[in-house]
Length: 239
Image (tube, rainbow, N blue to C red; front, side):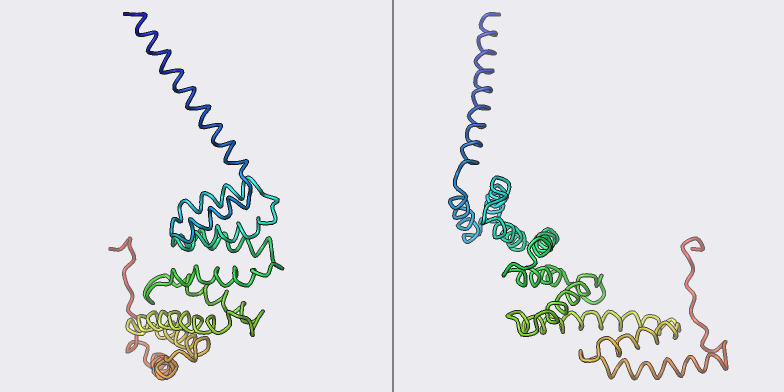
């Protein structure tokens, strides 16, 4: 009985060790494949929508052939694959790394535009966090300044307007809240920001109108402090 157990244990150990060496051989064999062959495989996976597989192949290609002439293209394709997978944070980081390492590359403008698109795709409604809107507008504006006649200029201009609409709507919502609680100085500052920073998104006239009301309320409060007294909300410790 003991001899049988020993025999079975030995066979299992042999199988485990054998599979380990076979796995190791496969890894070595893959790493010795020509870079062009791996590139073609990754491109096929990407074009057929197998993004997880494509990402793995591109990353292997990057790691196994770091000094290949294909290396910059591989880095860019990794970013593109993250973008297709809607992993926008990873994609943005990869695009930014590409433009940092290859500022003179013919695809640098594309990578910079795609960085902006990563933030643009994360934009939410005006009542939510507006960091993506701000970052997208910032990147797109820099792109136009650096290459006003470039291939991305027209599309970028349209997207900047969308970013500014979001940012202006957010400012208006905050200003309206301050106005409702009679915080007229704070409301005035927000309405003035809309007029100054986002004059061409359709909220200019409304902001100007409310600026006049805020100014009148502030003047009235100075003469009659009790009539326009701000609403003070209790703090968390007072509730």
